[in-house]
Length: 249
Image 1 (spheres, helix red, strand yellow):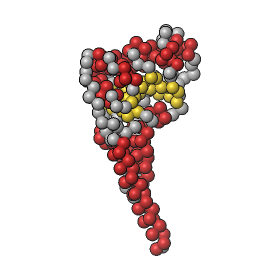
Image 2 (cartoon, helix red, strand yellow):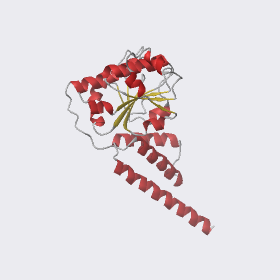
Image 3 (cartoon, one colour):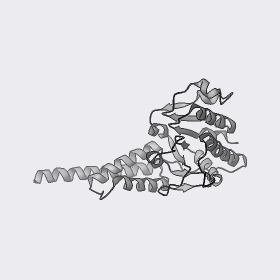
Image 4 (cartoon, one colour):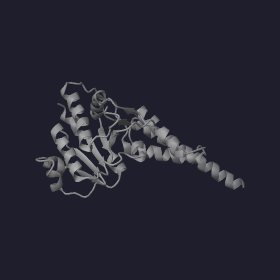
């Protein structure tokens, strides 16, 4: 096994709606050997609520981290995998979790991998999906694709454990930018594109495409720094142009 890799796999539940499901996810994590759980705006619950489902999982429960915003929970992630029951054509997707698992272990060799699960009722919304480098689903019955939250978490973690236990060699990938670094890049890039009047139609659609390009490129921190410097220079040039136009007027 590769405990260091497991330590860099973070399960994130975005707005979970039922303490029973949270407890069942804790139990699945304990079963599979993972200990890092983050809850974003969860339904109110106590440790006792979780222990009623996840017996003898005090160590996992004590490590739970709570967040008020998804961006904060994802800030130190280097690769974010969203989970979904339905296909999302605007995003890079896969339904082959078994093949994906060794790739995630390679990412976990050098940085944090986040497994992001949405609310039980309707899953991840568009804003959450925009923050995912990849959206993964299980090859379930198309007529009844939605899994219980804990079942989904268990299957993903099982595949990771199997990939590690079967001796997959995790060749380290190059260091990747964190999600927080990428969010700064997306924010400043959007500001720069507005400054040069680039947007001719829906800015959100353009930025969604730019996000997907950046995720596929697997940007390193130094590459993000270069793109940020370009965006800042665009803003400075646009500001100087605006000041010059005002003076001439």
